[in-house]
Length: 418
Image 1 (cartoon, helix red, strand yellow):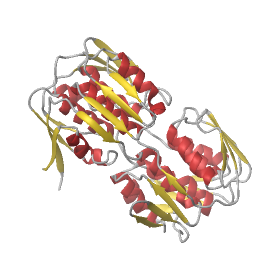
Image 2: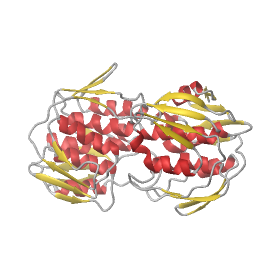
Image 3: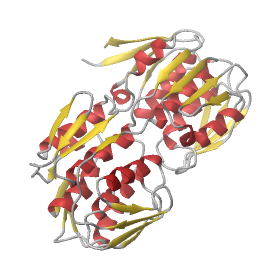
């Protein structure tokens, strides 16, 4: 039965919250289990719909999956090489099995991926890289079929950084013959985490976290134990919650260095930030200042934080702009925020925001994962009325126990059946 989230806003959220493992780090690590027969053990796996979808896909491919405190993935008996539409349509990260399947079995057939409707996210850059490494690529009724008699090292230049493209080609290259260079590679911490795990398995990868990643191919990898990094987007969302509600939130278990671009903007917006070795605290006891933002690949301001930061800016004293440089359709939350009293004007990839004194509760609809989070933040900030958010299944793809965590911070928030 469909659910909705109900919020009675206007209460400053206060307290401490533990950040969960990162979805965007867990999914490529799970796909990497295909590269090494035996038991790969992953700790700090978040309880998310996307993780369950990836488990279902891996099981379809013959991977044995067991989950208690850790997620155990054993691909010793894996023999499947086709990722069907039914398992791929809801999650773009399913395409991450393409590189590992090709590297290990010499072939892969993967449905064109789905996920959030935030703009065109073609996988042509993945495929061009695999072709450079000697694979043949054909399209067959909505499926991508990739085959190779043996991948060889190559130089791959990305027109623009792509996280999943970098991860896919990195996983394909670890078992290739020779050296592969990925030029203009994505620099996100999740890419660094995947490289670290692969190196622990026996791969020879250098340069992760820079624009040039070099992979010296090897013949075999061995499974290991690995802990998934904390979710930096979840961390940022709770920090912004303190700002939009005038609250005080300490996020434990995070990595402060991942958040420099966000911290800089929050401090410019008069949100006070304190930090320790593995925690960040946001205190929203000042009037919100207007701050211009442009999303960029890491270490720039994350596109996955754009919708949440926009909620903060709707309550600012002044005028600002948010420019979305990554995805062309990532402003679909704007009409919903305007229903709650925000003053936002769109012009192609730029949003012009005039701060208002307060937001009001309303019935709104989530359009994608991060838009869902922005509507929750707006509902928490709304000074009067009740906010009802429908289509919250988007939220369950990327945020573990968000309702429960905000409840623990004093928010009046709960789920209800449609």
